Image (cartoon, rainbow, N blue to C red; front, side, top):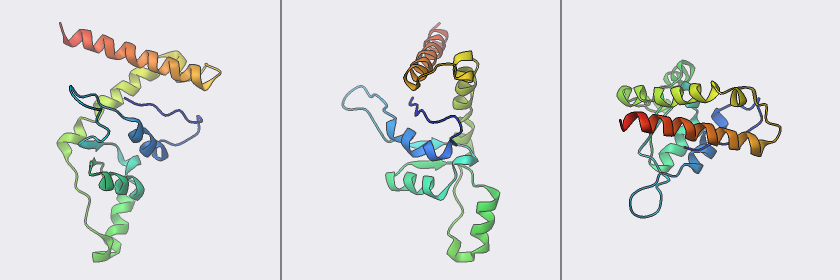
Length: 142
């Protein structure tokens, strides 16, 4: 899991590539993986830039296309390119991330940003995320 801290009014979509760049998945042997097999996201992340970044890195994009983007592509005809592929089964797994974000926001310090410094806010975010992870880990091992 990776976090990128921004100003409160910053949108999520521009942070897609920086967050993806911070992801490190440990494997039993060797250095951590930095390129996932697929990335599932909602329509807010369906920008041309995000899709191009995923394509360059060989990552499968599981992001539905916005209606206006699809309409613009169809309007261009054959020059508009192919429709984006969408794996509905992988997209359903995206709710795991949504549930984690909801659990994080249930913590008052994260939801209200009471911490004065970015470092202390980020530390609280990491602390609460690790508490959620440990709680879920102990629940699954029983």
